[in-house]
Length: 120
Image (cartoon, rainbow, N blue to C red; front, side):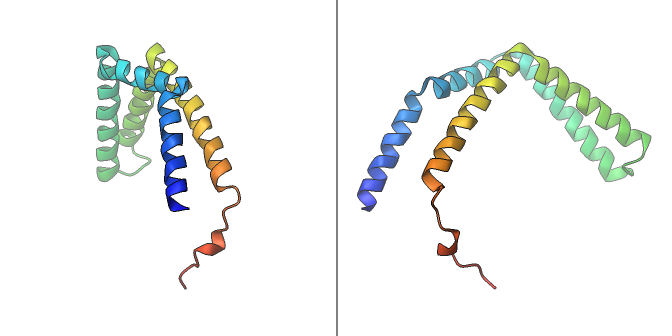
């Protein structure tokens, strides 16, 4: 039985590799990884996240420093998310995520969680 499960899992893996949604997502990811504008926007967002984290470590959440850093983080994240290539990627990601969720439901819908007893 285990070999049958492994065989079917390997078949599913191969089918997913060939799925047009997965292929498109991988292509878009490669494009983003090589797009200087997206790289720059992502870097700015990452630096704003570091700045916000540092502000939280040194000031209260209600301080002007933290509020300013949070605003900057929000703006840089919004700029990144508004980039056309990122929007295209996020749309493709949503489609693949929905595919994986559907597969997960099919595979584990009848899973009995009582098979794994909880420790007390």
